[in-house]
Each structure stands twice: as structure tokens, then as C-alpha cells.
Image (cartoon, rainbow, N blue to C red; front, side, top):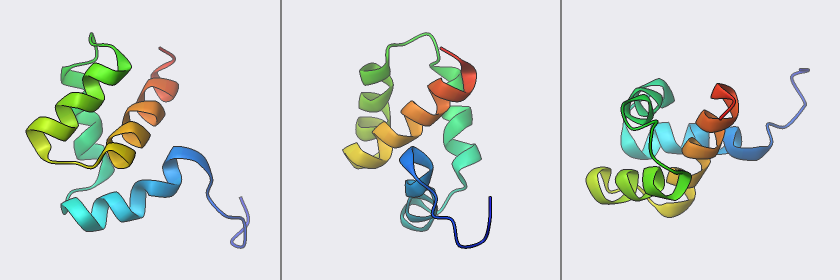
Length: 71
């Protein structure tokens, strides 16, 4: 990727997520690893209810995590 190429998709939320919640995205991927047996929206619900994350941020993390894991 060149320096002037804009990040697209779920990863485009990562800087905002890290800034707003004070933890690197790797932290959230570990949280998702622990509940990887759950469906997409169930994982989103956990991030929202237990970690007070907004829907868009939670959905972006889950979508990216599931795509990288191939599930």
C-alpha cells in the first residue's frame, strides 16, 4: 500500500477505536477470540453491552476479525 492510499472497510475505524476506547485493536481481537464460537451479532452485542462500545465500532471489529479468521 502506498502512503497516499486510504484505508477502507472495517480497518478504517481502527484509529478511532483505539483513540476512543484507549486500547489497541489487538486487545479487542483477544476479547473476540474468547467468544469466537458466537455469531456475528452476538459478538457485537458483547462489545456493546460489556465494553460500552458503539455499534459501528463493534461491528467493524467483529467483521474484520471474522474475515481474518476465515469464519
